[in-house]
Image (cartoon, rainbow, N blue to C red):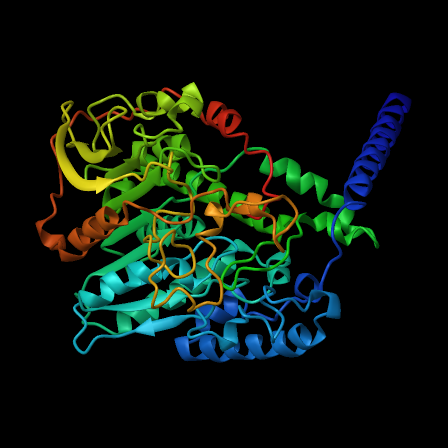
Length: 524
């Protein structure tokens, strides 16, 4: 018994020492952290998951409207004088103040054609807003699909909203949006889910849930853009570093990054709880995939098409292949990978590991799904080519796309795939007629040059490309998906029945290569 008490005493002492060290390290970091502002401390009252499961779309919008009213009264009118700048989204006199823009894309929206032939629910990413999939929404609307762009709970309002949200709330919002989408069409009309980044994991989770819950409408197609099926394992360390935030005076420890809010439709500041909830969601998705594979129900999963950049600072491409695609049935799914630009003056500066990344990333062939690679072959070959290998095959076929990587673009990024170059907020070449639509163009800042410390914002945040010079290809492929007749898709493909559960590069190696150690730059 004495030994037991000695052991307990030792554990307590060690725990206290560890907590003291952790608190000291965090305290040192907080000395240099900016002050928390009203948009960091205010937490709007969203509907809970239980309330959303009983709510109508109208009731969700009514609560959403109230939340934005609360943000105005609790945050906007309390913006400190020092923060009343022309590029603060929470300053009423700012040029990017969302309610005064041509459209406030922070809010949920619905687009319904006269005679909908199908419906689609669009699920945006973490810290993002419905703006991120607006161009995809237009593709569906033009094809006579009813479109619902749902604002995920905790998003579009204030960063502080993400300090208390849980991932189950995002799932409840998705279920509610799907109920509304299905009510707009005939019962047999196709239902699609489109998910960007974390919205991709939400879409996959909903499709998996629908296999286990007959009360949920099953989607006929999933379209995923840079889906978050895996993130760095070091995200857990960020959660540990946030533990001292429970101590009065250490509230800033709950934030990975406290950054000026100069984007009208995306948070820049990043609370640790957001990463925690993303990690918990991903863990649940992976466990559910394995469970449904073991009991044989994964075979009923709808076809999935994924668009993914081979270089991605935010999500793990190996996890996408290992933890999702390796379990998919032979159901006409497809993985589309965008390679780096090999015809650029930057190529000599590209790390060698990325020059060979595509060959290391691809799984062994044959596979049960189609694999498509978009890129150019060698320096001097600026035209991009689509190279595809069909399920069950080992040989690639190629076709020229008539598109080019610009010479100053060495790769795409996690945040760029779904935005055309003429996007008024993120585009590198915004349309002259719409370039002032949202008060600021963040896509052209990467071209800005001058002395350090001159601009109001840190230009390091914009080194990442924010629009896609190959967007016409992505739009073409999504159009093809919309036009498909679900009944015409193959139900079974004669292919070698095995699961290749390992790629040539592991998730750990990929993490190390990308150096994904934190998200303090607000670029999740």
